[in-house]
Image (cartoon, rainbow, N blue to C red; front, side, top):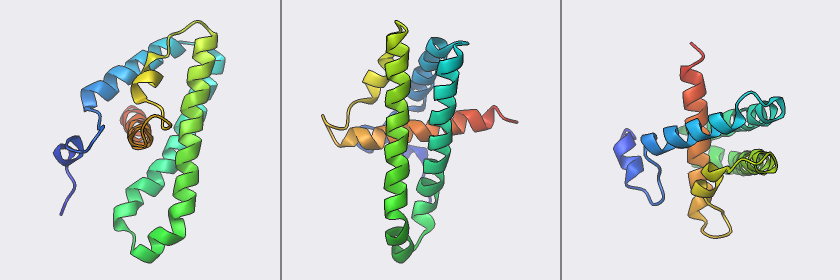
Length: 133
């Protein structure tokens, strides 16, 4: 079966493309031309690209390949979350709201937020990739 966007939207705590686009715009506006924030965003994007690679291959891999790569995928996911947190923390120190981070949620409150953060990381790679043409 081919995965389609509508199936994703039925999953718990999924984000609509419009929601992700709005969060991304909010993030971009807060970052602006701040060089330190841009560097942190670059770190986030680099982490997201590595995570996306694991996530995109997941449905294609055999059970054995998944077991072999599970620790690396988890580590990459952890780096994405850390990068989101670092960027949000920096922006808040600069007097920005970083409300986008609040919308994405905290893993400690609900484990579903971990997946949501991964989803948004994949969206960032999607948006940046489209703009790289």
